Length: 244
Image (spheres, rainbow, N blue to C red):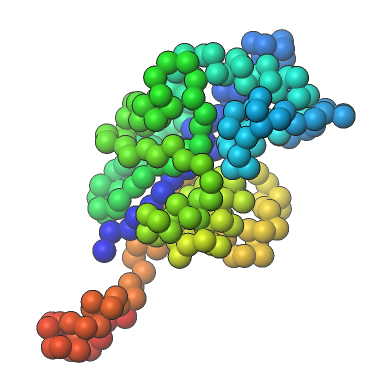
């Protein structure tokens, strides 16, 4: 049976961080050092920083940049006013999207892409994301612009695996669904979030490593389904014993 896999886009495949830093340089003259926080800085309110959800990638990324609340608002306005901003991003790893497309095609995986990107000037966020994925080698991408728990989404869509760069999203997947979670973590290995270590969430640092892990998962013997068991009990299965 084909694996049903969801990939987050920003931080997993698309380099949103670099695009935001470029926008910072345009607005403020120089980028704030990564993973720092200005003394006394406040977070922009949900009404002024994109969609305001806990899993919003833009809000999560802004919190890393050490910007004051006013700077965050300016940065968001700069992003929102840029026509088709989400199409301007580079890949985190050149060739990663194409490698995913080729492996998914070869193994007949069902791939969807999840994103919480807010809208910008130009076409819809969904269309921008589809165009970006197509340009980087994924022919017919299924893109869902979503909010809320990734776990409930995984459960509703009966996903097998969700790949995400936010630990809280991975925890949601484990809590609210039967899907496995893979955390894309490009920080230092000793900086892996405690929640991921405690819950046994699989952690990878590159797309190539993630695809290798998914291949190994696909090769694992599958547990028999209820249908398999019924067929075997009725003598309709060609096997001599119950599979799995």
